[in-house]
Amino acid sequence: MIDNKSFYKLSYGLYIVSSVSEGKKNAQIANTVFQITSDPFMLAVSINKQNLTHEYIQKSKLIGISVLSEETPMDFVGKFGFKSGRDTDKFSGVSFKTLDSGVPVVLDNAISCFKLHVEKEIDVLTHTIFICKVLNAELLKDTEQLTYKYYQDIKRGKTPKTAPTYIENKNNFLPVNDMPKYKCSVCGYIYNSAVGDPDAGIPAGTLFEDIPNDWVCPICGATKDKFKKII
Ligand code: FE
Image: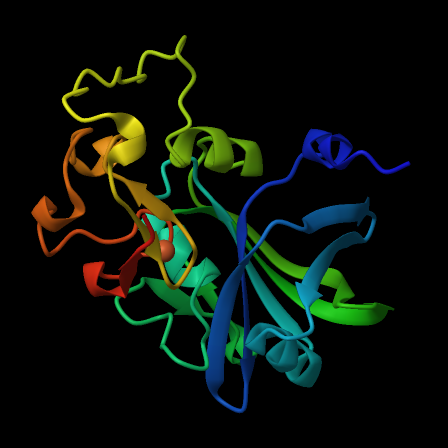
């Protein structure tokens, strides 16, 4: 048997994986970056074959890794995680540095960074695991890293009642189930009027129409016009 809940007990971090090819750079979010050996220093990185970053890595054999800080804003994760480099320049407005051979490494919200060279590729159906030698490793900030669990439990607003940041929904002037919901067409996030978006200062009970126009999807950073009414 396969119990899907078993997989939730595996733990991960969140990283920005970047690469370069013929002067063009791209980067994406990945949660599968892990150390394999320490003598020599080797890391493994698993990337979906459909991603533009995958294509660049195969061509250049170079990878940049940024380990994200726990304070990383949701829209920053969304910028690298839910948008394709084929449509947008993910580096616009982002602080980064270019290492030897042109491989970019994102600095915003990064607490450490690596430059890797691909030594071996392992084909795993939908993904390729790149086995890499560490050429450069740098500690940028000695603070907590963003774990996948933290991203899911805290950043998505699923704050436990016992947490000091928990906000009780007191605006029950409309039955919760009757309040309209709007879905982000980019990432699938659902804005629920009954819940609001307290992290962005939108209190529970705020109708979608009443949200300021500069509000963006808390997951992927999409603008308000990318939302469609679903109920
Ligand atoms: Fe979104």
